[in-house]
Image 1: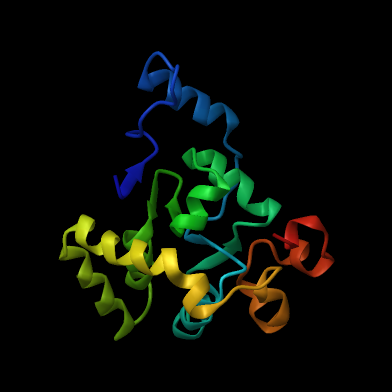
Image 2 (image 1 turned 180 degrees about the vertical axis):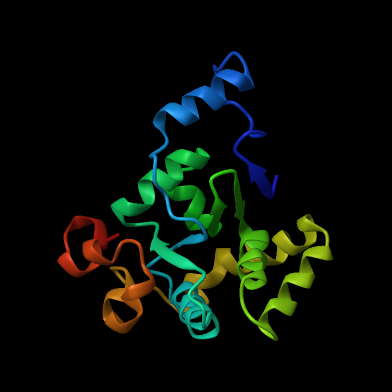
Length: 180
């Protein structure tokens, strides 16, 4: 499933009902999470270029960012029931408290928040998800070979971009969460 809402998600294995899954999510979810956060692989050169492109195009600063390698990503991952490995395979966009998207849908949902002409890219959502994600997954699988990767979150080298990152203090302070 490419588009998920928290109320309609599958319960974790061993959970008796989806109602109890919703209760457990509410009990473990932080009370304040920022909307419109793109969680991405911070060591991937292709991902970093994509983030830089979105920041440049997003003149109204509607989208925030977080490297999946940072501790700041953990509450978002818990909220949607994903782990870091999931996001290393497919980017994650948390639109709000009740909706999140992954893979090609996430990328196109981000585009929908950008001004014209960039928002037109979101019209590609009419292409069937399995086809979009087949292309997305092929590129994602080969991105390190084609574009390279770093040993730490690349954004720390572009300090002027950090204003848009929910994990900026962590990035500036260094520490084990900056490395992969």
